[in-house]
Image (cartoon, rainbow, N blue to C red; front, side):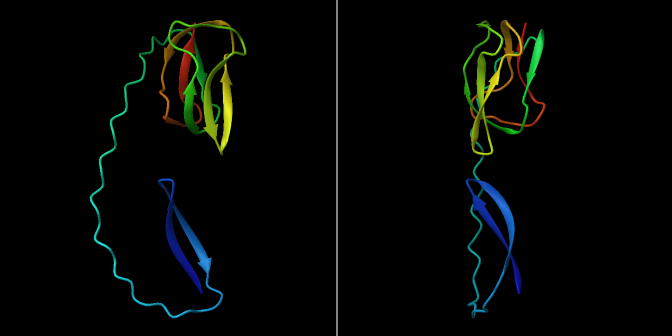
Length: 122
């Protein structure tokens, strides 16, 4: 018999199907009363972006775990700008060219999608 379950791991909800190999008697389960959902904590605003310069995009979806630069910093080509965690791996996002950071569009802890603009370099 195939049974469907919802499980929650680290705040992410997953639907899973499991095959019951040996049937076991199941006692009726009474649902617990729904607890009120707490409102998410407000996130600090991201640094303003001037929109000038070369955009550095997220190459894959993931979580921003560290930002190594700030607006106004001079960077060299290949310098690490921030750390993006994706699939349990820490990925260094590096500067595509030398220049000055003109805007940062993300903060530590943000979840980003492929193609999101992380920062700009002039």
